Image 1: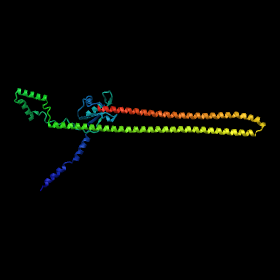
Image 2: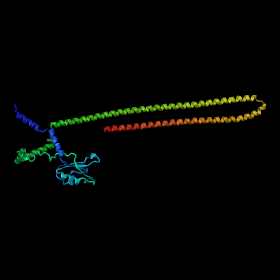
Image 3: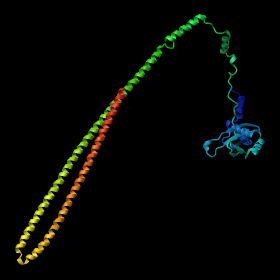
Image 4: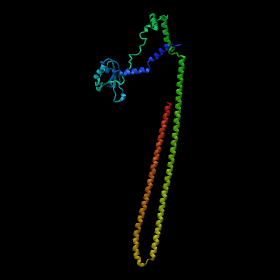
Amino acid sequence: FTSTRDIVIKMTAITSKPPDSEKKREKEKKEKNVAPSKIVVRRLPPSMTEEEFLDQVSPIPDHDYIRFVKADYSLGQDVFCRAYINFVNQEDIFIFQEKFDGYVFVDTKGNEYIAIVEFAPNQKVGMQKDGKRKDPKINSIELDPEYMKFLEILEKGPEGTGNTVETTLEEIEHKERESKAGRGPENQLTPLLQFLKEKKDEKIKKREEMKDLRKKKEDERKKAREEERQKRRELKEKEIREKEKRDKERLEKRNEKIEGDIKSRQAEKKKERKEKDADKASKDEDASKESDDSKDQELDKSDKDSDKKEPEKKDKKEVEREKRLAREEKEKERFRKREEERLKQRERKKEMLEKKKEKEKERREQEKEERKL
């Protein structure tokens, strides 16, 4: 059983310890009550370094924290460096501000930058480490047991092999002879090296076989393509020949039709002339029988006038007929010329195809010769 005295002591101990939240609040109050001592120097040249800044600002009053921040070029026009300093004495803050607030810093290119000195928005100061943790093994090599053994071996000197000078010389000469004869350790192959060499040879053989297969496949493809091209050319030549035959037949038929039409027209015109002449002769006979002797003179005059008019009419018809015949002949000549030009073009195309075939044959022969070589 615990006594009442022990219980009272424990209760007083528990109540006397303040919680962690209260400690934090007390620290915050103390920090708020403390006057600010950390300042910021803004709008420094972007090309400035920490050493240049310290050279221009020194001597700096007593301080326990300093940090130089380089310029961030991603900000564009607002690219500046800045420096944070935490002074020990507050009087030094105002002296530093009066000296460097509005101070003109000049960079290497001669550009001027007016600095601004103000209190830092965050008055907390980070802990600066003097350096990395020291290695405990520094300057302890003399106590290392392995190093001590090494020193002992050096003092004793190298151990001799027991061979004389003559035996060593004979061994060296023997090794040289074997190396010249190709029996040295350099030329000897171990089973591992032999296995690797065989693997390499197998890979080389496989590559050569694959290359040969690829070449054969390419040759077969080329042959198939050439055969297809030849078939297409033969088909085109056949089509061209058939078209030429058809065109010739059409031309012959047209010429025959034109000649037949001309002959039929000429025969019809001859028939019409004969009929007209027979009609005129019958009319003249009827008029001569009905007329009287008193009117013979008048008829003679009218006959003379009609005889003059008839040759004029005949002359006009003949001229028109000659013109028609000349036009038909011109049309025939034009048609024949066109056909001749078409035939000439086809002959030229044939010659071009023949030349191409000859060139392709020469190229194939050259390729075959190159492959043989």
